[in-house]
Length: 247
Image (cartoon, rainbow, N blue to C red):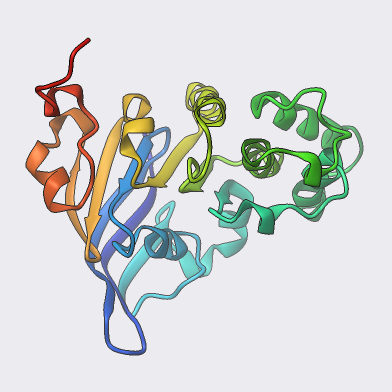
């Protein structure tokens, strides 16, 4: 695997002097399925804003494919898809199909290539047959999948998802997990920002926990001790954490 992102001594200081990120050092390689977890305000979304060039470091560096992020924004826009928590803000089209055409068309994709990209995104997001639907008629889970499909239509090498399970019912969570499994199997790098670790931990290869803007743990999920979850304000996702559990 080759390195995709790297943060080196990354700091972000807000105007009031508060440190949102404090000496963050980590890298993400192509093909990984990474969970970035932490309580609200831990710095998850802020870190990703730096990774895609939406925020500038107060100090330190952020790299994409070995180049400073600030110098390769067009490449990041082509290769990295970001699904925000507020999926409504990412829906522009009058129909599902029209919405999926928006991103690749802006990248200059036209004709049959555009149609193939849309069809592939509908398939991977499990929305085949929904191309003519109007977005307001979709359920919350379907809108989340539409936002993911809109990113997939641009054929990204990496997909970042911010709280993809927020406010979804069990069925919708299952649908999103199936989409993530498909992308993982296709070799797409996945970065999931969530505090709901239990929903996705079985599929991930790595768990990074942020606490107060610092990396408090970074390892394969099964290597994270229960004490780390407790100290970071997270629910331990493993059955053995609950001795009273009865099968």
